[in-house]
Structure formats: C-alpha cells, structure tokens
Image (tube, rainbow, N blue to C red; front, side, top):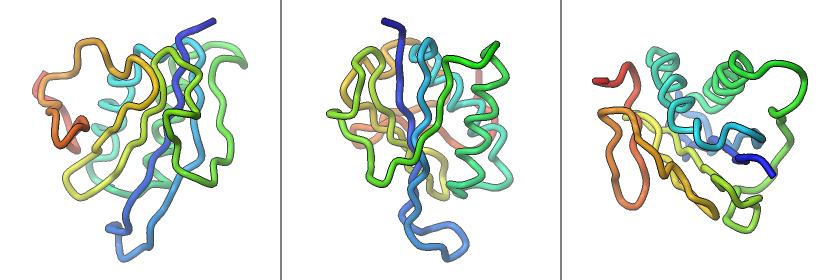
Length: 138
C-alpha cells in the first residue's frame, strides 16, 4: 500500500578526482509519482556543485523532507550495492541516479517509473532520463 519509490545516487568518479561513489537509499512511501519533480528540484539546487553524490543526495533528501509532514513516509538506509529491480516494492520502483558533468541520468527499475509528465527539458537518452544541471525550460 502506498506509492513507494527507492532512490539512489551514484557517480563513476568524475567529481573532483574522486573515485566511484554510491549513496545510501532514500525511501518514499507516498511520493513515487513525485520523483521526477523532486529530481528536477535537486538538479536546480545542485547546478553550482554538479556531480557530488554526497551533496546531491543530501539535497534530494532535504527537498523530499520539505514536502512531507510528520515523521513517516521518508526513510534513508545504508545500501552497500546498487539498487536493482529486485529491490523494488512495486509502485514507482527504483531510481538509480548517475551524476556526471552534464547532470543526472536516471534509470527506472521494477515499477512504473516516471510514467507521468516530465519537466520540459528532460530527455530520454540511452534508455535513461537526462536531467540537466540548473533550471528546466518549464
């Protein structure tokens, strides 16, 4: 029951010479259909910092928290491996967000994915969705 989603950020090591980085997993219980909007807000907020997984994940969780009252419906846990479709609760599924110099490349696994309107400027690229750093054209 709910509209659940799991979100994880990763990089391949392009940020300031850092090695590959994998974030914890964020759990949204009622906000699966809002993931695209939440990621767009994260891309806007992270425009000056770019592909820093630690900061981007923290900003994403903060943005999620701004819209959720009380102490339920948002969780974070250590995830030592990349999310897969098998990790999905169903509903929206899992979103693996790869950060690079151009923005965020999002793969949707094990659920309906975005399945809703995306912000203008989000493009489908190699089976994933591209959110550019900065404000969308919407």
